[in-house]
Amino acid sequence: MKITVGALTPDDRQEWETLYRGYAEFYQVPMTSEILDTVWSWIFEESYGFYALVAKNGNNRQIGLMHFREMPSPLGGKKVGFLDDLFVLPESRGTGVVNEMFKKLSKESAKNGWPFVRWITAEDNYRGRGVYDRTAEKTKWVTYQMSV
Image (cartoon, rainbow, N blue to C red; front, side, top):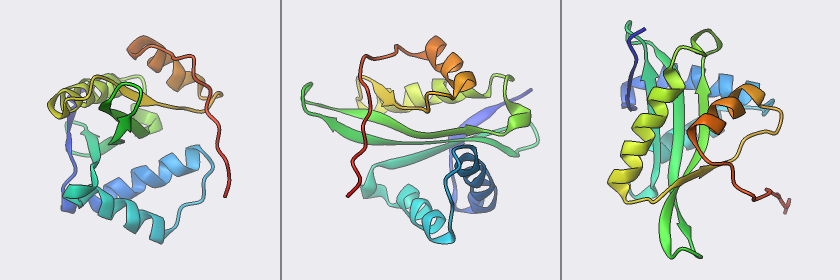
């Protein structure tokens, strides 16, 4: 399968929305039009430092998405990358899409001068974790979230 990975364009909204709804459904998180509008606006606000990549198949159909951003790493005194969202359509999993997306993320991160990209995933995301174990080093950090 031919796979291309690149930045979103304003014309990509409908397919992007389908993918992002699929991502939210995977994690059982409710999705609203307001959330979609907000995230879409972040992608195209140049000063925001929030980015999106999409993978397309040979028919130019979106089959995967990746959202990432810049964040400070105070202990290192550097800005680094943070991968927020990664989703591939179920029928396109296992075809190399994620590998191509990580290659592009690595190139984009190098352009931004980030020494690394960090992310979290659900403990029970076994398939995703299998890919992540081959792609990156698992850290010792445990994630907590405090509701306010």
